[in-house]
Image (tube, rainbow, N blue to C red; front, side):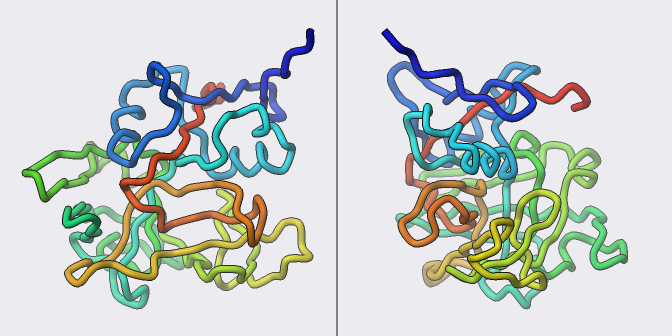
Length: 241
């Protein structure tokens, strides 16, 4: 009898699907709870770790083909507008509101408030966020510890046009001012939301990696619905984290 080898990253760390009873896929609200439930030695896999798993085919031992990542992203409907104090994503008549903290970030070599920046904000870990249900039609996402989050938040010029490839930053996100093409194995594609609802002002949620028909394994999604159930893959923390 043969068994599938345990999927691992190149440094030997084991990757494994998070499971609850018989379930291995979860919506966005549930991912907040999963992040808080992990042991100190565990964390949700990052975009770049999923990239390694996909390119090495380590993911093939996992049962799901789409995964919500550790990073949490947010942007306004008009990417030319400053992020502001809050962003409303509306889905199934429910408003998911993100409160943008007034914390300093590096923005093209200058230190300014996150609320005044333009582009896509990225928080390194969803574990830094809290979600509160206000009523049946409103959830609020907020920073749990602003002093800590300011060192784990950045703003990027995300290349979010389907099938437009770009080179990535150090975290594996395709950057618009680094255009490339599908022939470059280091190039990646991204996607952002197209519709927001009449009162919606933008999108926020976990970045997603998956396998799609048009670009295979090379796309980063910043547009998935909150109600969609996706996998969550767990990896051991690196020694210096």
